Image (cartoon, rainbow, N blue to C red; front, side):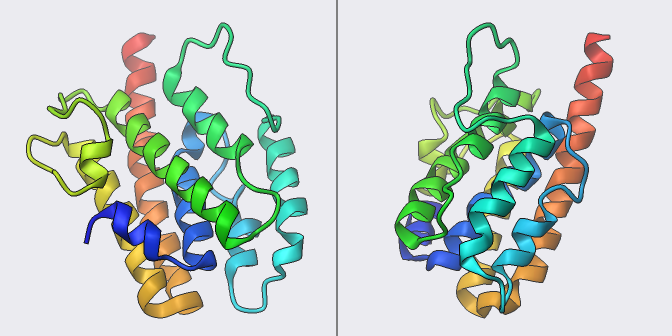
Length: 190
């Protein structure tokens, strides 16, 4: 099943986890530590209060210095801008309708971030083809991100709240990879 199909079929928790996982993997671009999104992950667990989502989200935005609207004027790092937008555009209300829009946008943004940071060429003209299942000539970093996005959605679809721990592990692995890529990139520029 393609990533687009998985997003279309996901429930509210799966959609929120999908968007959050994409954002979590891109935290190194925001200068955040590994624990900054932990309260949002906890909110998705059984017993988490959906009404508290907006307040927790605002706390994360403050910690990372991201306003609800991101001004891209004068921004040189497109990957960091995409990550900032993921956080800025996160819905304050945890509903399926809003989470679906956010999860879809985060999926595209995260794949684009990985595409921008991958030194290998991706043969597709856009990440949309990748999300629809056309994977020929895909660069390694984009391929790994696509697998992670699919895994998170499949884990939540198959296990509900019980799949959150494994989804977080998948996201943590991706964050470590991206942190290494960002570090190599900074050394190359320095």
